[in-house]
Length: 132
Image (cartoon, rainbow, N blue to C red; front, side, top):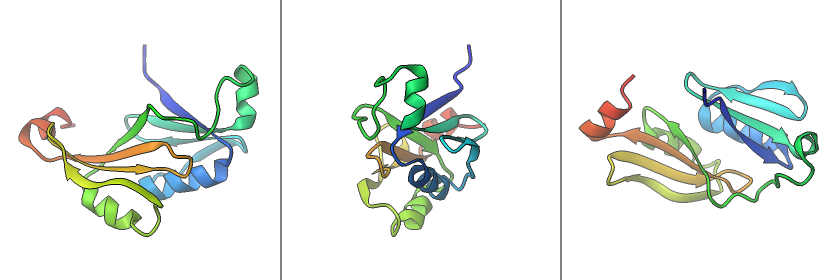
């Protein structure tokens, strides 16, 4: 089995794709006007409009209703990401902070309210864990 992607359902796909393109620096590949993917070397973030939900099961997913999942991105310089997004992001939950497990993390909310964590390993153990 391979873990392929995480998908966000949104009521405004253009807005959310624009947010993630700017926040990550990754250009989205659009399959249709209702579905786009941001692909990195290790994972894909898929973004689908609410119109795609009916193809699976009507009402099975609701946009802007996530209170449990955090989408995480490993970055080279989390403080640089923070500076880059400071005038763009409306809701920073936590400014860059070094966590007890060795990552320096920036937690924010995307335009739909989903939690997003950008992090950089800073301790030797964390750096080794994420070495490529």
